[in-house]
Image (cartoon, rainbow, N blue to C red; front, side, top):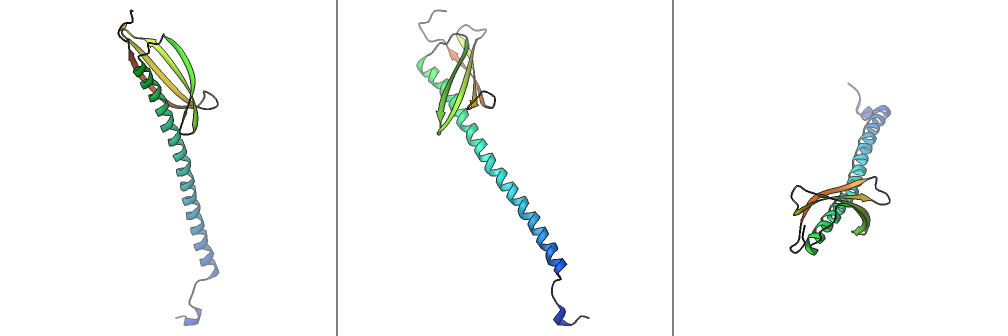
Length: 128
């Protein structure tokens, strides 16, 4: 049996414990930074979906009857700028138009954040 004066941890045991704690803290830091990065991405995607929904709802509210083709523009939502592209196509029913809206991050149309497909009904009074 060892005398009580020798009780305690050796330097090797302390260094091993510190190494384990350091690895655990680095893993926790990495998870935290990824979570913060994901929050920014989700925020951008949420705002982009709002841009697409707003565009389609405004067209429905105004009673727009867009000609088939591609339209482009910019929008600002939540102090963030976005680029949108809208593709309008005819459907088998001449009273409806299909609208595909794509919202991208600024400055270019390479990073798609949101996509929405909807339909516009021909307003009364417009002859086919």
